[in-house]
Length: 227
Image (cartoon, rainbow, N blue to C red; front, side, top):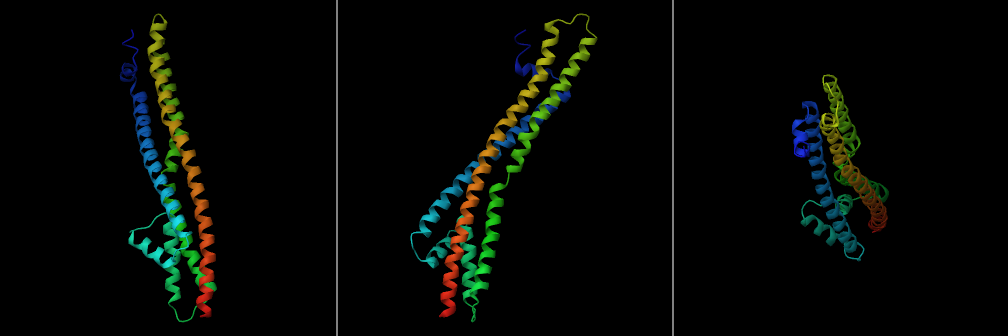
């Protein structure tokens, strides 16, 4: 009896629809954990890079030197990308014979907004999948459980005696689907909430830096216009 009621045996003896539900939930769990590990690594890398860039930026160094360093590092990301987009536009506009400071700063701000949206979109990739897995997996598992219990009761209709030994296995295999649904949903929900909060915090940092850098570029643009 203990062998027959093992989890593996119950899964193997479940009806085909319940097995399909279990396979789908297993794939959803693997996919969500893949996103979780990748997103954790990306956010951690982005936070470290932003901390390092802010330390260099507010140390009072030359902006041209910082820009050249960002360009040499290859494709910038995070806060470096926002800085690089704004300062590249500033250098391009500064080479014109006549400089309109307000228009130049507006173009720089636009370039930084585009870079900002691109960076936030990169950070948010995969979060919708985690939210979907977290919200739908319990219902998918519940569907498997309902189907399994319905099949169990239909089987009891043809049985002469309804003992616990007869009822327990089909109901137990049906309940495994609900357990797998929760197993897939709970980590996805926790990870989504955690990562969403970190993305929002990084977005606030990007907004604050863009505002500060816009003010700095505005002062530089007016100085160049008076020169």
